[in-house]
Length: 324
Image 1 (cartoon, rainbow, N blue to C red):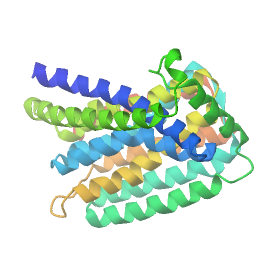
Image 2: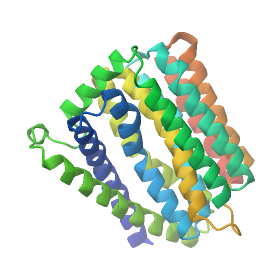
Image 3: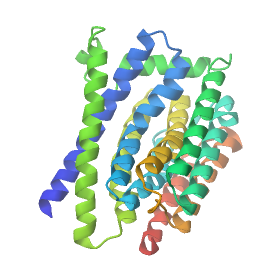
């Protein structure tokens, strides 16, 4: 048991470091290929910070650990908009651009609701196709919105993010030669894959040894581990006052978790054993998403009090694990 715990923690650590380098490397590489900074912020960084969720859930579903697969996505979606967004508001209250709450945030909310409905019915290869089609449509909308004229603030924040570097990149390493970024990206992806494999295999063993339902392990240990890249990116962006990037990253991560991650789980799960979660957990996932959206849309800012409300909302979800 001790060995499995140590290996799972090693997987968590590898996931965090590798995901940070994956996000930074892919973002800088996209910039050097003259990709729009808004596309980098909305798509590349969002996909990069969600990569651990994709891979962990897909690997778990492929192994038959469907409880871990769905619990990880549900738990990560809840964590992003309660624990992580709440911590960001407690560190420094912040405002957000109205364009983000009008466009990207409602799209992410719709993605979470769609995943919640399908996860209740059972995620199968057929529903995976539905989620993949929704992901393609969402990417089309995001790329179309990226050409709008009201994205100057996000452009500046993305450029600052890629210039400063990620949380685990030292100042001396931030001035790199062009060939370094492709290598950073590939090694980051390999590290995320390795960390995901370590985490899933050992988390499944721990759940079996303790007699704990897989969805509980997925909702807590695995979800917290795979959400660390979002937490790292959020803290670093918040310290630099990049509030649009904070909100866009967290809601965007939930969009990618729900659609792309849900699709991968569907494809990796056989029709005979659909991946499902309890109605209670799914209702909390949708409810916390709507709560975060309502708090942001009300005054286009989050205060410390509202951050505390989000943290309390996360704490209140934990008793649901007793009936998961």
